[in-house]
Picture (spheres, rainbow, N blue to C red):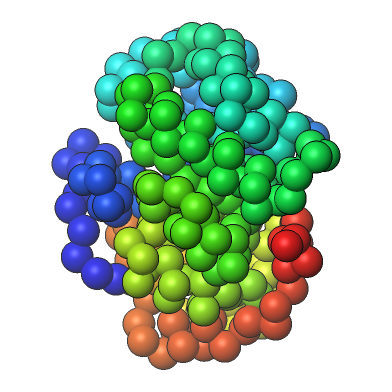
Length: 288
């Protein structure tokens, strides 16, 4: 893994964004359908040293998450908080309004990172490309106003990013997509790095599918670590900002204990050979 600055209190490496900010390379993901636990978030912040939380309006947990952050006592300036804009709120005015409403609901003055959640619009009347551009201009405005310290996209492919680059003035700071040993979009990763876009991966355990893989289990046995830790370590050693999700305290603790061992080149090659292009979540391939 490339050399990156380390936050001393956490011993968690950070990755520099093109605007000079540094995002912790490991964070806690949240989601809907049982993917949020108030107690788990407080535990992650107070007992595990987690300082990077990822959420979205779509998940329906903004209010509870905001209260959990407040209860933790962690100063806002010490926390990296990412939120996402749902496609139902795309458009210039709607996007700005939605972001400000999310800030209000969470009782925060700003987001460290604000992402367009999906490349396809849910609104009719114009093309996806036109709506992405209009919405992105709203995020650019929020960025210039300081309400969002960094802005980015989620689930965008090279074609979507190329269009956005042609249509707008600020290149996304981050692109967050599905990333695990079975889903390794290397062409997209290379493009992002060439363009100065930080690559962030969600579902690093492929919703549990990869944990029983013989190769993963073999590497885990070799290092006397759990399969989950092997997958997370593999991801961050590839320089990917990684956001595993769990609502169980023991697993959150386990997922964040990945900085005291290192995979060797043979391990990285073996895990890198597991790609079979499967998605365990949304697939943006057919979004124009």
